[in-house]
Image (cartoon, rainbow, N blue to C red; front, side, top):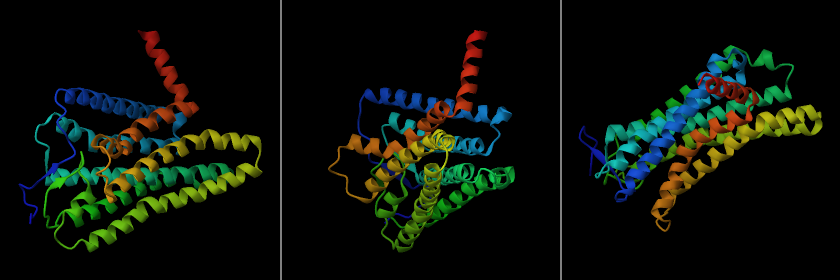
Length: 311
């Protein structure tokens, strides 16, 4: 039985000896991390600097891009260190810190997407009341609640897992995972399991229910509305739906992998599936919104042309 002391640690058991190829993996992931940082920071700066983009929809996008940076930073630094290391151990405090960052990233992502769907619902279904309902103070409150609620929810999860008495310290993943630690416990985990179900319901099913409701109302308005209304709905909702589906499928694969025995699946495929929702979404969102949102695309294009002209 292992109690968490200052010197306790976990072994990340999904890593394998890749030989000299590990340097190629390192460079590939470092390039991805750099690209994620550059793309998200660029769009955050573009939104913050240009007053024409100081609208609710773009403020929610800015929150989304900040969350992509937050989630990526919770994953990549430790992942890059572990790839080059011969011994894949991580201290317990650092492991729980990564769990907190990655789980809160996922929670904030779902809440941000839910808030964005509500914003689109008001813009398309209640256009005359939009400016009155979606004020700057309302936007600030929605963003703050999305972050604070998610952080508190995950903080409770970590506080319930950290005191557990464990019968092992091997996590069969390339990053720290809360459910994997709970499965190592020798002590009673009933409270952890009950809270896990409750937090999953509030983190995933509650936002998805709100998103489903708003899109049903949007579809109803589109079918009964004018061609201009349908075009507005398609142009603003398509990127949001694509982002939602991409993240939901990635998160679903990760949950299924954590809950079921995946030993029959090749190790490299399990690693790719577990990393999909943490690597693809932070890169997918800035590229998607940068290309699909005409205002952002035009500003980014003008910046690129200006730099080329200067050179």
